[in-house]
Image (cartoon, rainbow, N blue to C red; front, top):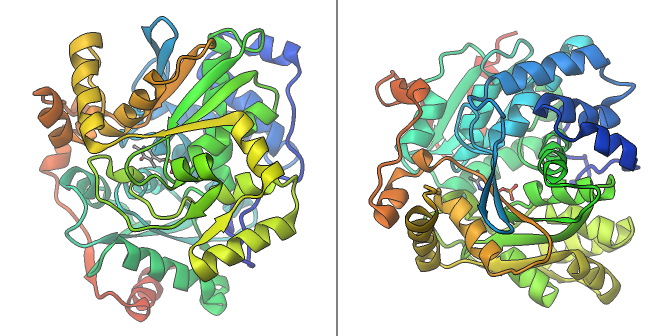
Length: 444
Ligand SMILES: *Cc1c(COP(=O)(O)O)cnc(C)c1O
């Protein structure tokens, strides 16, 4: 959790995945979200975080959500359901994990009498969720890089209107790839990394995956698991959200199918259909939080599908670095295809889905959730299918208005956003400049 990425560049995966018995799962059915969160997370944290501390962190993290069910589950049609993950402070599903991660990090740092500098790059949702989560951090200072002038107003203001001594917004004179390259360079500078206690909160942080496992259980149990199989459709980019579902299944949740939904940045859909993972260019879409070139968490699936054979992962990642692609071999590919289906949604289909959901179901969907539902409706399964709704429609008002004619309203607790004063620093597109900014502002 504190180091994020291993020093050899690999991603962490638990040595063993804990299991639930059927009786344990049945006992959780109908329990509040907090209880399910404690049951799931404590399987991983037992022996490192005391139960009462974990309970406190969970209670505080989900008190920031403004729906009584925390994550409400809605029925849309006979076998189609929507799980709304966007009732947190920044209106995207990133809040679910980030609010808990910040509290776990703060507690661990305090216990080891350490401080951390957290650096992250954002093209939109991650930055706001991190700023909100670390606003009150005692032991971490957060530096978030965003491409200057290239994020939406709501997204930028969610980062820059938070007044806190532990938050610094860096507007880099470059694009998102430049921001990410700077962050990567900082992590590869081992002297700097060790000197400031560099930590990361992007979607490869295992702490985030753990917190996301919870809602697969919560929603699955509500629809009759473990006595019945449930399917999930997930609007995906870095594959963190979907991978959490796979871990839930490995922990004992009865899952029929996982369906990966992408926009026209379809590397995951292509890989699942052909076995070839190949990087192409990024196309900007109306679901920008899914506009990615590489899907970093896919590495974890490659690892599990190859039965934890690290040499297979090393070969795939080496090939990716060398040539921008790798090919999954037969037993691993077959294993993956037995559990996952996929689909890609075009821009026209995304807008049409938003219009149809509004006119036919009375649901105002954001474009990311619409990508998911479009793919879900093409799959007629025998099991109940839960689509994860990953953002609030008010976070993407233009796309929603263009498709439905509706004005998605920001919840009143966010109405200050558009007028509050902003604070950010414009920094040249250079590793040295960002490094210097961090060193001169990380007061301890
Ligand atoms: C981050 C994000 C996604 C993609 O999630 P991954 O875990 O990266 O697959 C989908 N929708 C929204 C709104 C997001 O912010």
